[in-house]
Length: 570
Image (tube, rainbow, N blue to C red; front, top):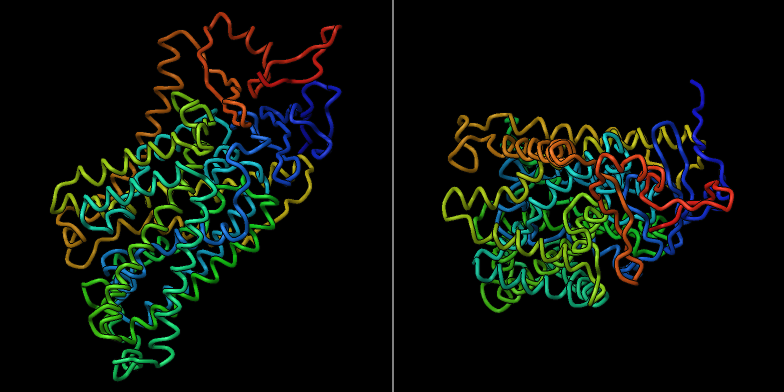
């Protein structure tokens, strides 16, 4: 296969060495166009397809994410209230109930560690290609699939904004008024100050880890002040009662995936980290190790305390079994609330960057609303949209099946489209590798083992396929009284709506309005924030626009002889 000619226009800035290039360089490779840019986070110069959001050379959100914050962004999202709370919400009891035995339940938790490691490796390699862009999968899908133009950005934007609720974290508070107050307080905290909200999240993360260490290390496993007569009784026939029902096993795996899903949260803030790849590589891996050990020890402690099948709050029952009811149990319940609040902060911080990066792609209306960081140096627009959508999702569902569907859909409805997008992301990594090698670029700072990539892909395919397996007792014997696969159908519907939204915005409306969409780079404020904005160019002006702007939307500059010498941001 011949190497394509990719230098579209030889210019003074042109160079095959990205480190020697300015952020004005435009490079052509067939029908793809790359820009080379360098950020101030120590990541060096990188290449990206020009239709993507422009690189912010200086992060308008600052560089407050250090190694401690990397750890606790992940830890606080992975450990919410789930390890503490009711068996119906992603806890040890859920996995035990679905697998049927303690032995298989513990094996599933070990499988979860492998899933987290494989996924982390995939994200880390993708971040190595784009270390100056926050937003994680927003960026990776955008760059893996630049054609058809804006399809993945628009589809992912529609899905992410419509399903941008965090009510699975807030509903754990059970009383709607308390949930609204707690979530509103979390939003106020992250809007008011970026650095201090990160500090608060770190402190809560430390408290959370100390609580779990206390539960596991100093009580059952240490043999101290325990009222449990025989802590090992439940392990004598560990695999007794193991299920062979495919639906139960698949639901257990989905819950395991959810329990570890926060391992990628730090990738949402890559452009706010100095030397991001080595920093995340060390400390992101540490966060997985800490959570994996605590999960396993906490499950063993729970099973030892013989509470596992209880329907009350898991950790609360645990303290009652060990210490008896009283002040210790009340204190534990307070720690559960603190843990939940830390989870809200971590999810808000990570998701706000994801939504902000979607806004920077130019595919959402009112570009400045999503991107600006004034007056507090925080992404107010993304925080507000999450607050509005989450409150609607908390308040709107009535009691009964609809409310249960709402609680479950916080992860079921998102898990199915997530699985589809993650399959695309895994395949996209192979595509990015191919393009990277074809253009003879240097090896990325980190490359995942192929077995990790294959494992990650197979797991995502599994999560897409298994919701169609009927539960024991027939199609109406699931968590709600209606058809068991409703979540999967609604998830597919969300993807279809994404495609419809794309067709309407990119093809139907331009055809009816007599225009074409073109990207333009817009500087927002004086803090380094910038964004793409898709503008409507009348059909009779398209040729002129294309002559005057490069593919990234920057105004071309020419010398006194009329030859193009560089591209400039508008």
